[in-house]
Length: 187
Image (tube, rainbow, N blue to C red; front, side, top):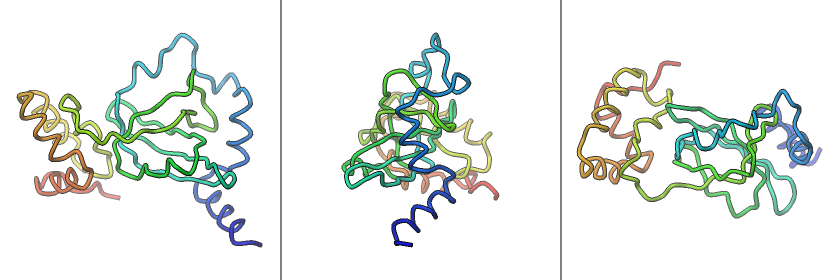
């Protein structure tokens, strides 16, 4: 067995999805049980940014890959996938991202098909970072909810300052750890 095939088999066991299942199903119309309602404007109801909890890329050919990501926000947790070129390999775990939709949202193997994810590099003063803290980062959700509420009631200048200092995931994690009440969630 060639090394690439062994790696593909390992990835398929770890992720539970295969290149062939996603590559072929993306061109087919999904089953009606998996199709989202026509009248439900899903993208408009979702938050503008999500935190990437995990991401996996599997090569399709020399120029493309299938990527799957688990996204988190306090209002919604999503599993998404897209077919991309080698150039979009910059999205990493813990990044803040915006979803770029591919027409009508479609579900395939439990994941929504999207056009791509775009990393949010510039801090937004109106976006509450506490809403993107995954469960694995914080054991006490009540304390996190209180912190989110305090951020919401702070002045616009204070919110902007906080977001500028903590937009990077490592900085936000360090802040949460320094506060003491934000220990990692138990396994």
